[in-house]
Length: 350
Image (tube, rainbow, N blue to C red):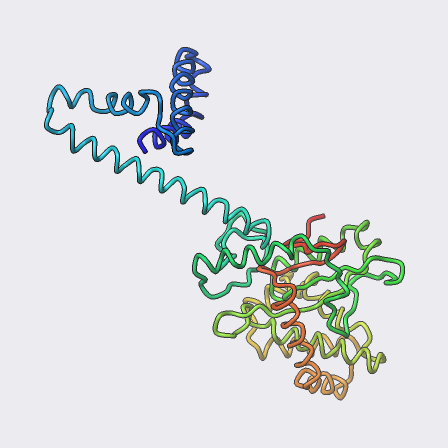
């Protein structure tokens, strides 16, 4: 184990030696000579062959030569300590490599290097995470391997529509490719993604971008963003009413999400910020009602919308969206998009 541990240490310090050897070339030559001996011994050990050089003894001798002269009795326990330390170095290195591979595969398949808690991964796609309960080490591997087929398969946006759906861009669906946006009204990354998409003229001209709202929930079932559920209820209520009674409800669902993501209040505050951080549930609902009145609905028509938010039809659609997102699409974060045969995780970047 000593020569394996020594090889690992030599590889780690190789970067520093390479830099120093720019100024001291002799050091680089000496390092390469030692590294070659270490590599030879290392390759023989990992193939279960006996090392045919004295490299392992050379390492021990270099570490113990001063002790031999001053305290001969300490040589044996120190030699054992070196062996134990070597075993620990090898174990830690192997474990680190396995964890690194797991994190890399999780990043590729799921868009996050931490399967149980996506938000804790700084390398993951920029998104509002959907955290799960803690998984054990083997369950995390199971999720990663289970996601590989999803990463490789051909994704068709229309397979995941929960009708009714609408496009956020003004295009003819017959002349464009379908794209599906899955967003949470309270997610700040969704706001940025929404804006980025609409600014990308090439994308919005070639794709009919359909929207589905999904409420991210905490472990206790409460919405991650306190007014997301209210906004989602009103969005689907207006969308369903626009299908059954276009006049006067047509396009109001899109007006709602557009104002939330792109509009500002009279004091120049972003509406989403106010819904997420300032408004309680009652204020949030009253603000939506004020918008509906501003958009031309009468008191009776607003009452119809409010009743629709509490209807079984709206609850059913929200539940169907949840089932599709969690059981079929299985994202680790929102926003998630499906277009051009692939599932795209996190922020849409122009």
